[in-house]
Length: 540
Ligand code: NAD
Figure 1 (cartoon, protein in one colour):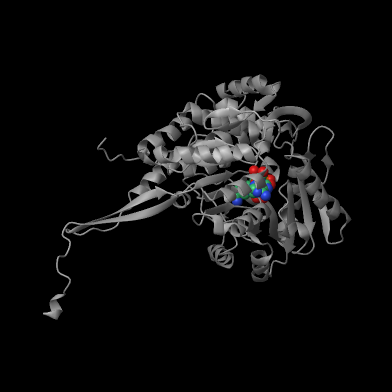
Figure 2: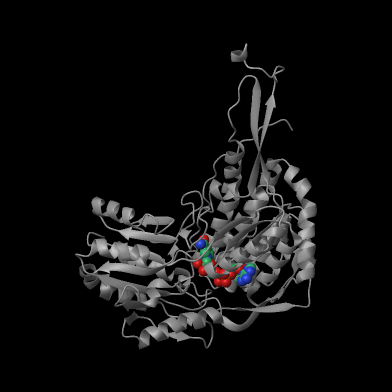
């Protein structure tokens, strides 16, 4: 009581290496053994209580696609309505709880993730989302911990922004949460994103319905349990696996929709936006629409670039986590002279990539997430094989006999508008367009306008004038742009993340800008000396 707290800027969680012989390697292997033969029953959680429904969805491991790992109980309309009611009921006491108490819950969850549950949640992430240990560690452990810790710091920077005052009147801003409930709708590819989508509005005093992706269900459910262990009161975040359209439809019809915090594909966000627009007359407030959506992320190289760094950025950027990062490099523009120099080494390195189960630590890649995705990626590869406008120079092999495996593939496109230079594929497919060394300006213009997306990009050059020229030509082509680095790997607190155009509303997850969307400020002005005469001096 009667204290103004300060929240220091935290440090990023340290990434563990899992080298042979390290204690963390032993612990993750034990956690994998523990989880291996479990089929997790995953309930809906409403008002802090599990609810088991008759509508059950079975989830299999992507790299072992006949093996069921979870049975997800899906919420129907009745459960979604109950979750909305629970969120509305929890709201008043939650938003009035002093912010340091709210922060304490999420900081405690970060601590539990960092120590007690690090290996279990990483193992769940590896098995369910088919990630190698390094990819699981930077996602379910480090990025999620960073979101939780940094957001409490960003929260305090928002609350401390106050307007001017005079000696006779005081002004203050009260950062209220928005009035209705928030829907947090998550993609499969990052456990940390799902965790941030639901906790960032909650931290600011909102109450939430969290719809996890069924394809990330093990780690999402585990995180929900961690939040409850950390002291999250009932109803503040309701865990609602369900068919997405049911959720949005029910929330809109309730009239109590305060906002949607979405990450996923552009098509789905467009559908949701239209659904909200159609229901706007019945809503009590204009809901906050925050969406981070698709990408067609580029790497643009110049003749002055470092060849080795370029090859590494292409391979890591395009193929880590099977190219299933929204920031994955999926098109590259390479000058002819550079291409001639790097081609053989690039192909050799890509062909030598090891792929298989995440439990084999020598692998660099695992399987893609599900059959729909496998079929979509295979379609691009098959069409490239048959096309006169494209040539597969590496990979191109798909095999679904054991899991949804697609070899890392490089397509060389003969036109910069070939379909795989334009569309988001969301798999391990990189398309390269080789440009004439003399045509830098024209090719930069093509890169800027080829795709509807603008999420991430990178430029490779050592000539400073050229770097400046590239950044200028690509001003609106990406919300996160890297110079001489890969297109992926944004870190909370270091690279606030998000893109423009059809890549989203660019509200920068991992920064105060995102949290600002979850408040609706009230300005309170108190006059210590209110006037008692309505006339002005010049009137005398
Ligand atoms: P998706 O769009 O298929 O699904 C996202 C979520 O929306 C899931 O929970 C899904 O069940 C739900 N959903 C589907 N249809 C819905 C509807 N009509 N109404 C409400 N909810 C609905 O995406 P995904 O396959 O899970 O993830 C991959 C996509 O996410 C890619 O396009 C990728 O670029 C994007 N992504 C973007 C970012 C970013 O920061 N920009 C980050 C991660 C992923």
